[in-house]
Length: 201
Figure 1 (cartoon, one colour):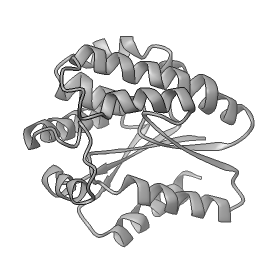
Figure 2 (figure 1 turned 45 degrees about the horizontal axis):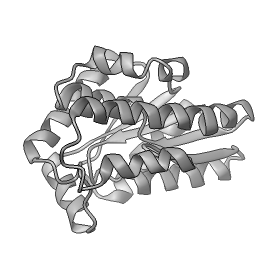
Figure 3 (figure 1 turned 90 degrees about the vertical axis):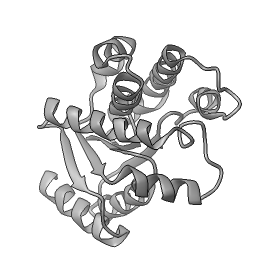
């Protein structure tokens, strides 16, 4: 399976993926954990360009194209080979992030960003776990960690639009995207998600 995890900044994705990975390994599932943007040497270098606070003049279209380029490298180098080797791949963010952030919140249009990512459409996730949480609280958590990147530093209004974008995608792909209420503590979030994972496998 190819399972992706989506949500706004500070939604708890990283901790949640670790918990899901541990659970699947205990069940004898061969797993591989990765992330976007990044996941491979070249893709990680593109990630640095995208998230670097110095790149304030990065245009919205360039940002979307860089995400698509990083994703293509990641797919060819990591995701597709691992899936072919029989791994269940757990990915922190994937195509839906681009659709919510650049397609909806940046206003480029979901259809436009889909065209940028046409290669990724050949490898859609089996399931996507979307953590739906209050953007204000999530942003506060993300900023409290220090080292805020270029997307973390966007306005609360932008992050509210990101959430709206995800909810739109949930309506568009209800069979693939599974919504988890993330306005709770991490233990409850993990419990809710593992319950869904158990149902899926």
